[in-house]
Image (cartoon, rainbow, N blue to C red; front, side, top):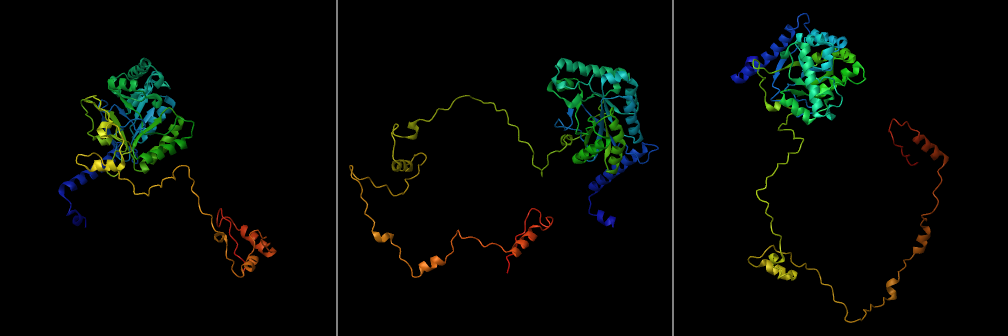
Length: 420
């Protein structure tokens, strides 16, 4: 039966399909094989190599571009470490699932716990920086102070590592408080700025269960992307195992991001892959096109129209009939509307004579009475006559109808049926 189905499939298409299936199976097998002792581990499905100079800013929370991930692919990132009592637990949890992540290290934390930075390197994770002191309002700093925070943080992490090559040219601005001056400086240094696609809000005073709920809900809403977490938070340590198990159950795959080097070039991608929601032919673009900057070839002013241009006989007015006749002649300009055929108003009486109207006859105001009209008028009830008082039986019936259970018809009162 399978053979019959494949008879009409072209060989190149079938070959591409086979390669795709084989790559998927290989990735799943590699993930499990790379995690000895944990056959059901989530694993790391692939490594994405990026060039910071080609894509200096990523993360759809703030920028137009994000990582070129496929559907159901996730990149885990952790900020603010290392804090040994919590960061070491995060490392153990990731190791148990053979998951690789990206850590953004604070300089003074690296000085306090340099062995924690080296543990990240030895475990194969990517290491970026997060300033020296984590200023909460970096967007209000002078560019000189901001540059010092950036440079000092990089120097402290390099010192902790003891190896310049182990540090990736990745940087995340504290609090995501971006400024153009900081972005330009980092780009000039060949450093890639990482925002995120969605956070788990684990820096707030919320429970670990809430961290899990937010992470999964936002990931499901996006379908893929960069998840922002904090390895220094105890609530993150408690939520992380459950998050990883749920990612595995829902078919998500972990991607490890590393910088390009001469020996390891960037992964080939297309421009639209760097957009979280690229435009398509079936979905309208959600923004207006940018207005181009026009360059005027000449600033010459056009002359304003004069009455002579309209042939108004040197400023004198003309009647509609004359204008119509003029427009119909050869070489005439825009035709004017013809005179409306409304009846002309009669001229007033000459002098001070007053118009005298005839006096109406008295018969005009007389109404012929019909026989029996008076009797019928007496028989007609007055609009102000008193309404009949309902009997006791009718009152009880109305009360029973009003007291009907509201669940049958919420917000309405049944109207009583008139007694026969």
